[in-house]
Every structure is written in C-alpha cells, then in structure tokens.
Length: 102
Image 1 (cartoon, rainbow, N blue to C red):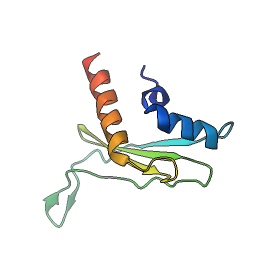
Image 2 (cartoon, helix red, strand yellow):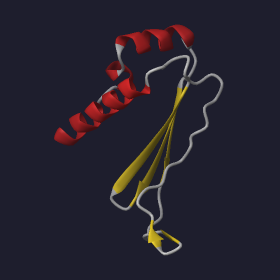
Image 3 (cartoon, one colour):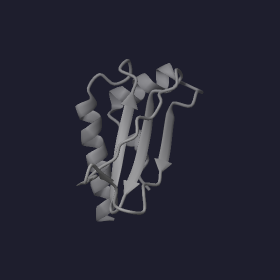
C-alpha cells in the first residue's frame, strides 16, 4: 500500500507536520455513484465530482465518487499548505500509476 503522506514533496510534508502536529489533517470520503447511466437533458453524464468540505483544522479533503468504471476525485486544499496544486496532481498521478502497475 502506498503511504500518501510519504509521497508528498518534502517541503509540503514539513509544512503540514509543523502546522497540524497532533491534529487530523486529512478527510477522505467515498460516495458510491449511481448504478444506472445518468443523463441530464438527454446527455450521458461522463463524470461526477463532489466538493469535499475543508474543516478549519484540515489541510486537505478528498472526495471520491465512482461512476460506472470511472473514479472521479476532487481535492480541496488549504492554500497555506500547498500553493502549487500542480505538484500534488503530479504526485497523485504517480501514486495511481504505481497502484495500477502492482
């Protein structure tokens, strides 16, 4: 299993650890999607995203919704912890690739 926190860049881990030592700082929520193919105004819905609430003491909230054979992921970040979301996207993509290859 991939440890998510260890995959974050060192500077982000240090900031998160310093700011939230001893406090929960990550919320992950999985919402099963519809069993049937959803449509809106006759168009097939290709993806669904949830907006996870970011609690005041949290650095990150992740919402996951499954839709048919797709998993849609939404991430809500505290900008004080991560001011470069592209770096987190790169890490998530690499972690996903690592899981698929195994």
